[in-house]
Length: 249
Length: 294
Ligand SMILES: Nc1ncnc2c1ncn2[C@@H]1O[C@H](COP(=O)(O)OP(=O)(O)O)[C@@H](O)[C@H]1O
Ligand SMILES: [Mg+2]
Image (cartoon, rainbow over all chains, first blue to last red):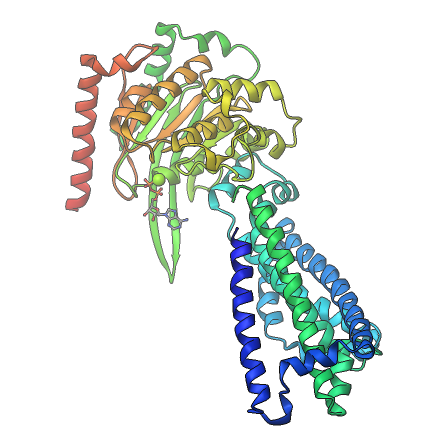
């Protein structure tokens, strides 16, 4: 229900934006940098450009997906480990504030020299997702009601068992919020990583079209990137709504 | 202080005589395996550090001996340290001074042997688990195989057999509290800790719940400590009532309740009930106004 309402709001917003874009492009309010939307579409559906765009988008989607899975797994596992091994928790809290302050763009060059150009997009995507999911999961654990903690303590429950039976289900809504945030950043992270010098992908397309002043290609690539992260976001929102209902929350 | 300690001592022996005289079923049971545990509190105090060198004396020098299978009610103004005392007995908080033993061992040992049941004012049910799974949760938390018959039995005991598959959000406030009490009882605890479990209920539901708790407790006598705001509830349920003075919480008065068991809804109309109720209400008012005058 709410996901459908969300989607509707988005569609209304996007159509308004598209109409404005078309008008602004036709009137050339921003000069040659913003062509009319219809022109961008016309360019994108030419077979040659469609093929190039889809191939690049496929590569970016793959990079983003791997990054998403790796990043969210590591983020969740590290956040959970602090619940099992208490001394780690303080360190993780400090790490989360520190990690939040690092700009991803500063890590790009580091990635190139460590994991290589091929894997940099995955790594930057994974890192971006890791931040989002790690912080969200820690936040979820903070919100476990005290009375739930008391119940687990009153039965002398082992930390890992309390994590599995009580803490993790409590943190799940927050974790999924993190995943939702994470899918958008995964796409962004992958494009950023490609930008630093990957062999192919939307990021590469954006850099080269910018340098060659292929305005229509540049906008097509940007739009596809946006559509991809929006679609992934809604997929997760749908999953979240279902899961929360299942969890009785 | 000396007087109070004497009073505690004599009360304990009195409770045991009372138990023997009344010939309660728990007497017969206490010979088998572990049985309900006696609890001893010796000079128990709790001071919280509030930071910046500030401290707060929540509980001060409490001495109390609770007989195995006895039902104790703890009353007093809010903020006088009742929950803190209860949490210390449950091993959820360490005393700053003094000691607590349950059947001669520390509360932590009692926890490790899974012999403790707790139900708090907030029901604390897991929203993603059905009523049945919530009652079964202690088995899983304790790493024991789930005794499905026992879970069924307890749901029936609290009158919720038909709601086994309902999620907490589908249950009323009173039903949730009943699930929470079934959960506290499912592992057959030696000690039952109840912190205002009916605090959020309306008067009628509360009386019915009291009656139900009374019935359940009579079927399986367990050393029980109940914190409550309601003097009526305390008199109806307890063998002895402990009145705590405002901060720092001390035991100001310990009162024996001489009502026969089993008690039912009509017990509340007996003159004996009304007398005890009036006496304790007056004592509570007295203790609380003394506190505010200081
Ligand atoms: N964890 C804590 N830290 C600091 N102060 C606390 C803590 N728990 C309780 N207190 C304080 O101790 C006093 C007694 O609290 P409590 O035992 O909850 O009272 P009651 O249950 O009788 O209403 C209160 O003043 C409360 O603010
Ligand atoms: Mg309290």
